[in-house]
Image (tube, rainbow over all chains, first blue to last red; front, side, top):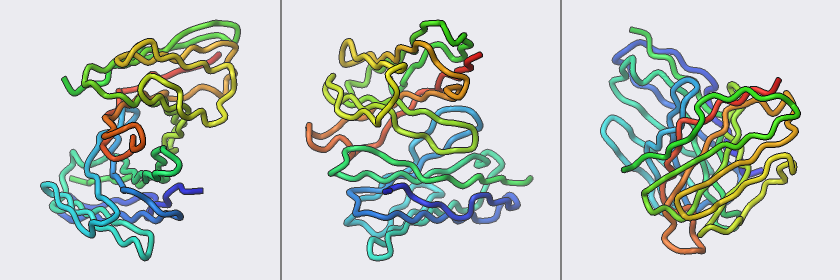
Length: 111
Length: 118
């Protein structure tokens, strides 16, 4: 299966701290995307990193990609209560023509 | 307009009912998707439409029948569902750069339809 595995499954930190989530996958990819999902709602796209990129930033988000280790990490700096959500990585494989989601990390930011 | 609109937001149906979920986008996206999501699980792909043609069916039971009437609309027809089909059904769209690379851009998701089968 191409499905990503995320680590940790759940993370609880204090507001203002940094949160790091990791994603590993099994097959070669075209790109890797990160999405956020607030409880019971739709997913919101956060960032897309292509297979030839190693790092990408967007506001308080920093994503890294290591294709040799088939892994990616999402760092959220200076966390806020509003960052409380589930975060999913999703991999796109050209051959399969589909986006497959990892198991997700449930992030809780405590005020 | 960067929205994907799904209706209804909530649906309760009996196992003998026929109902339809609707999804609409006006972003000019030519790829549209149906995902199913159970509680505390990731979304699971059901169908992909690329340029109004069904390109992927993830071995979904025939009681789920997708339809793409035009480039802006995507329907999911439901018939004779089982209680285990209760889930959040998510529609998404993306704008592929060409017919061979539908995955190279971000996907926009609707808020989902919470389906309960009784």
